[in-house]
Image (spheres, rainbow, N blue to C red):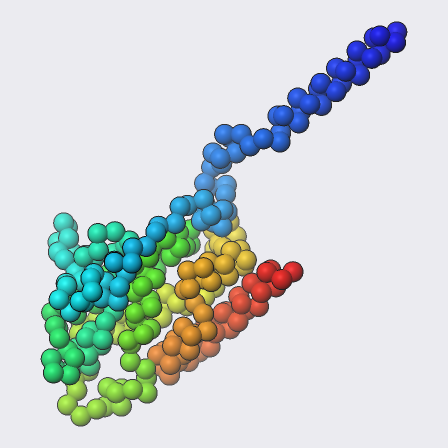
Length: 264
């Protein structure tokens, strides 16, 4: 009886060891979780980030001398595309684009009206496509498209503020020389407005970023911070006061929540 009792105890221990080996290690099935059942935050963590190339993300978007290098080329489908070999199809917004939009001549910075028009056409098309994406696809592209990040930075850097000319009606300027320039400004604002909140109205929770992941993404990619917020207010606050105020509130709420997650 004693021998049988001892044998039973050993069998019980062996069973416990087998259970431990079965559940503790990670299995291949755990990495094959269907995308439909995973959260947006999980899918963003799983996706491998694209590494940026310093030679491709210079402010000119292609080399050390931006004025001598075309930012756009004719794509295979006949539309204008970025001259970058990789990193996305957005291009940087440069001072000469703003000068052309203000109606200034070559001597005042309006270097190439034809290229500036092509740049605005490309940016309007890409922003329109991006803003129409579902929350899941939108955040995936925002997290990985390095050309988008550099375009956003360049637009906030070089776009005239509402209190600058030509908004004050400087003598000899012609507003609206570039077709679609106002639409571009509106789409840029709506991009920042959508980025400022982790959840689209009416979107399912699984298709939205958590507050913690949202704050981490904005901080890691430097998509929205206090200096950018000041630029946004200076550029858009005068003509779009109500939505700019909401954007600022979204950012303050995000920053407060993210700080809470970090320290608590």
